[in-house]
Amino acid sequence: MFTGIIQGFGTVRGLAKKGPEGRLEVDSALDLSDIKTGDSIAVNGACLTVTTREGNRFSADVSAETLERTTLKGLRTGVRVNLEKALRPTDFLGGHLVLGHVDAVGRIVEKTDRGTSIVFGFEIPRELARYVVEKGSVAVDGISLTVNRCENNRFYVNVIPHTAGQTTLGFRKVADAVNIETDILGKYIEKLLPGGKGGRGIDLAFLAEHGFGKGY
Image 1 (spheres, one colour):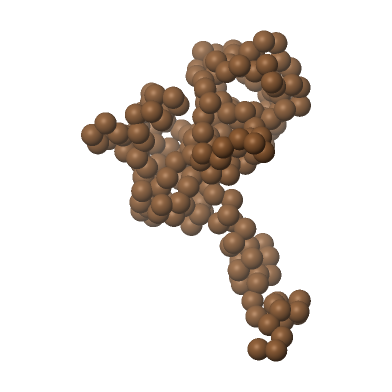
Image 2 (cartoon, one colour):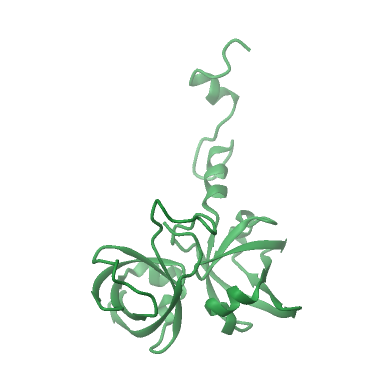
């Protein structure tokens, strides 16, 4: 689990394809002395498992599912990526709870300077739009952002200079593809509600069946 607060950049040293899967090698600007084989690390918001580490260089196997759902499949040698080490119980939760399980690839459709900040507009698949709400949280390439407004299958965020300078958003441009992870809370709530996706849902009959509401 992660927070969406990017800790530093990495530089891709190679992505070797092995059939439908791949092996990613990254040089990190972060101190990885506390990372061991088997630990999780988020690369552009995608949770990967470290398989080898030598100094500040690590490798991770990338499954066919991850390559299919994320922008990792397009990484090239020399490209910079966002890195975040897994959340520890004693860490500050500065962003929001990010699983590192990318929902889909979105695209930048607007990048406009507004004062010292930048307003980004992102277009996402229509089926994800219901999970993005005004003033809610969303992870873009692993970066925890607050949604300013939503329009159909687009949403807009304000990026302050610090975030632009410390993440890949600083050099992203219109039409670039990005990894999108919506807030997990919305998905659970949807499933629990009557008629929710993939579940029976919670209604008065369900509550009565499980001992709630008696005597009212």
